[in-house]
Length: 251
Image (tube, rainbow, N blue to C red):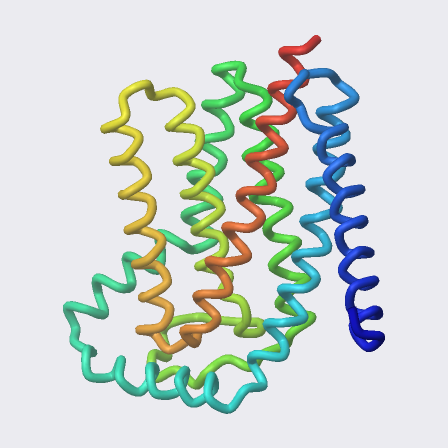
């Protein structure tokens, strides 16, 4: 081995040693043998890892938005949307956009919360509430931190406020319809109904994102970021709910 290869070799050994230590930690907190301590350890590891990953994603998003190619792509997509404008499409997109709005989702969320409470599904109720409330705080943090101006919309009847990135409609739609699908899949035993529920939720979420681009209140990257951060928070909350249910079973 040549002398100049020694630093690289030592560096690789350090990385291997760190990965070995990390593997031992994961093994210790793994719920393969369920116990309260291990489940709580896994939960804490998930929270810490999620916070670090979220911080990295937000920092990366802020850098990407300064890229001229991405800005040009967003502008071209908004320009191309004008070719699809028509009274019928506008009416349809208005209804779709309302299905991802605060008034509609809050009303549906209250009804769903009442059902879960009366059905005594308290873990699901707590998980649903934590998903929506925590997701709202996460959206506000990202929105205020990145501060991307909204595009100029030709649809004056569409009310929009705040910064553009990420899309609140897209992120909230992922959280609400995603969590609703998770709850449905937990209480439905046939795969066909589970697939149908997931497909319908996916179609609604995609249409809500398209409606926000159609009304020129968001760029494409705003919508994609809303989906990404929404899915991230949704998965974190579902993992927490499942860990809590496993912890209850242990006791």
